[in-house]
Length: 343
Ligand SMILES: Cc1ncc(COP(=O)(O)O)c(C=O)c1O
Image (cartoon, rainbow, N blue to C red; front, side, top):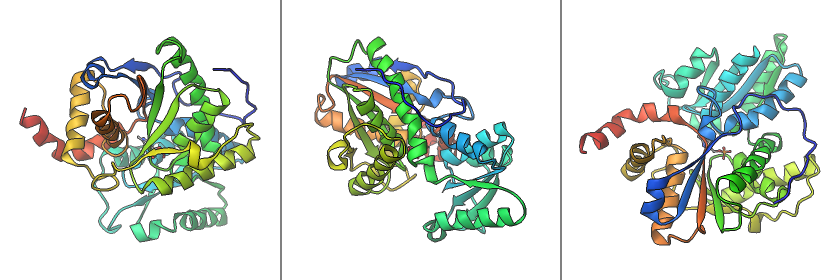
């Protein structure tokens, strides 16, 4: 592994870094592999999860452009939107969120991330799934109407998954280099870093970071929506854009370098199967780590199914990147509660 200095655009500091790496001792024993969690759910409390690392770059750009309002979009319980709303409040900026819901006339209750969005002062514009397909145009329209009233808006794509946001996870790979050296014993044993892919920016940063810092680890993502082809394209596009924009000296080939573990979307995006929720409860009970139902819970479930098939399929050591999402558990309370009662 090498260290290397990068000349990246300015970054503001929002995340509590470095995040710890925690061994999962009981699950390691159960599944016959050394399993660790990189606790990016601990980048903060309300402002927590993977999005903060991306927002450190994206919001620095918004401030440089003298924006007074941030516009972004996501699903109703979007962690990215919640993190953006809170970070905007911390920076004294306004925030407008386009959130997807089946029936905007009857929006979801004020719970989980939505409660925090509103408490952080974000305006919410509810849009239908059909309207959401045109989210970039809708956000541009919102920006234009704010502009017309004398405000300056800055638009962030879903998940802050663009080339600029991906820099946050290139930087995170610097931390993982230290983690592999200090906690995993040096990086000489076969190791895989596994994460959940939702919009692809985290994976893009990890893949590029692993190349830049010459990390001896496989990078693999479990997709929680769409399929392998979608993410090879989405992650491939972000990587190529970042290579071009920031003159990264790496050889990247999307078909070779983007590894997607497909087959674990389950009932669909943000929809939970009992087995997924049972595993989330097991991880909480045995290790004191709370995964979320939309991203990390599905990705962890996918990883465990693969390990059951072949305990050595990811090598001797696994670092599961916990990207946060705790607040998404609360709207699932009624689905989780029967799983606790039968014990
Ligand atoms: C908790 C959590 N984990 C993982 C992801 C996926 O990250 P990315 O969108 O960078 O693929 C997201 C957001 O999409 C998330 O909120």
